[in-house]
Length: 317
Image (cartoon, rainbow, N blue to C red; front, side, top):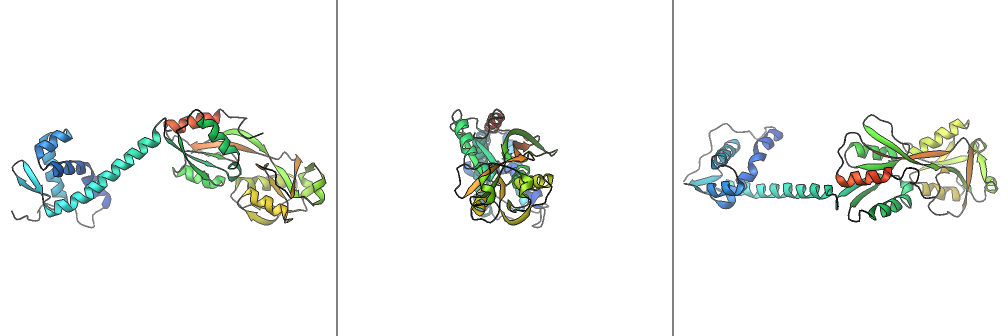
């Protein structure tokens, strides 16, 4: 039988891709079922749809594509060359849809699902490993995708749907976000071990007005806090170096390149002395944030509840 190009109006090659997808997507599984059985009645039984519905769907699919996909022999059918070509791509597309469906179901599983969790660099050495260890005592099979970054970058990832939750500072205040304060972390003035101030245990920040500071880059929450505290103490810090991690700044301080306002280290760092700041009050709030109105999967809800239960007891003492 000679197959003629269908005369019905069809979508042109430059038609909107979204229109083509909306037309074809509902019928791809039907097409694959008919192609697999080569029999409309059997395919209708397997797919649990009326035979008339299936026949109409195949006719409309061919009409939309503008090509014959089947050669018909009564109730049996066989694929045309165009149909075989189309089937290869359809099976690939359906397999990808099944894979994606399996993946999202797995991520939402209450027992073995996944949480995309972001946190500050300064919390990666001790705080977050301790939290995960405690959480997994009751949820041993829940998986985590972990992202370390500075606060503003994590907020962007929350808004983009790349993170479920993040630990950040300061606690965000925006209409599209929910932020909950969990704990507070005192900041110390870190000076080189051979610095004249190294013999002190406490200091008013105003006494460091003439010092050279090493700080995190603009955009980091701790940089903003440092600038605000110095302003409150009556001066603008003279910055010599800007970095991306607190421990890098400690290394710069140890090398005698400046002083820094930093949270306590996970482990003592040689070459530096850490002074308690008595005025102004030097601390940063640590909080958890998530996207307002975003539905939680069971594993995300469980981890959020766990974090909120740690209010006032989040950070190592």
